Length: 310
Length: 278
Image (tube, rainbow over all chains, first blue to last red; front, side):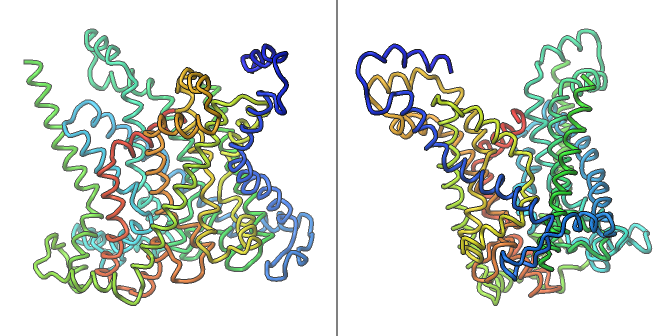
């Protein structure tokens, strides 16, 4: 900022243009920013404000904007009394527990093995990454066949292995969320591995060489050097995947529609159901704000944990 | 000696990881093999990985020339993904240029505002975005998907990061030659940013191609469907016809896998860049 002021002062006495160079730069700057800023005002600021307003209203969409009826806190009171919302929240939490810690640990081990100890690194990167770039819907279609309760290869294999009554996976309330979690963890594993491998290239070889001279074993190096040095990467992945897990929607909308019996419903799916199936725009907006609040709280908590730890 | 031992251990891990990677890819291998089979052989157990009776032409025809218009989905996906990607490139690189190379009051404020918007989950603004699209009269058009997916703070930041690293001397030199801001942007910044622009383009293309949520909400007419949405039609139309389903899934995945394998470094580095720098 100071640097910008200097030439302007120096040039002042020479000649007066309609726009001073500084002003011109500002105008051009705002013009270049305009599309992004307008988009953000529309899609974020206006959108949040409007959804906040709607969350205190009752509106069925079809009656037009004049049909918006202010009802105060009713939607939020309804939230606390709605068993499917409680179920969705619990499912979101369970889904997070299933899809965050275990895949991170698995990806860490695989990334370390791939980074130092294998040939054909590029092949492995591609192989593990293909599911991540594939359409999750196409991938889900494949897994829905694999998970077929009576004919699917997974259950045929389980029966072959002597399990008489294998789980019915996607159509069983007890396992539907687990099946969804397995599919999305499988699809996301490549991303986690790639991020870890990028993190590993930033660790200097000297650390390992020094440790080797001191006679450290492979396991010691892993726990004393690799894991601590990867902390920022792990934290990044943890936060990203945590937030991502609360946004899960596509795969549930495609595979289970939240069922059977709401056993796999989640907050975003409830927003979709209320808003686009029943046209309860007000109530759907209230659920949106609940989702926003939950993600905000979870993010704040992880940041605080990270800070306290350092 | 140590060197040889090291090499052996490296081969052992390579073989173990190789086996693991194949197990990992089994669902996709199964998809590929089923797409070639007769329906009655798909669910046969033990699995016949290389089918002895092949029905691939029938399956292919059912997907591409059958009653669910897969060719339309393809064209729609291409159209929406390419237009969205191009517009995102323009909007994001313009914003990144202003945020890095132009100095004016309010610049930092905009930067902080964009940063804070990043925490707003898309899903929380689903309802108002849907309303905006209806008010603009864009419901059930491709423009609805393009308009709602073309703004990307994430890519603006990725480009900003890269442009920050571009030496100001280039710009000063051009200014001495009398180049204006727009000229500098178009003939210096954009060419210098080519590698990162390519990365952004590929990743944005993949994301738009795979997007399910926006088409689901904004599209009504079958003939406008993109591939992921089209997959739902296949599922409903060919219930329990898994050979055709797998051919459809294969068709949806293959173009991206080819693009990805051809440009793997760019895709992987791009994803890693976003991850490491946050």
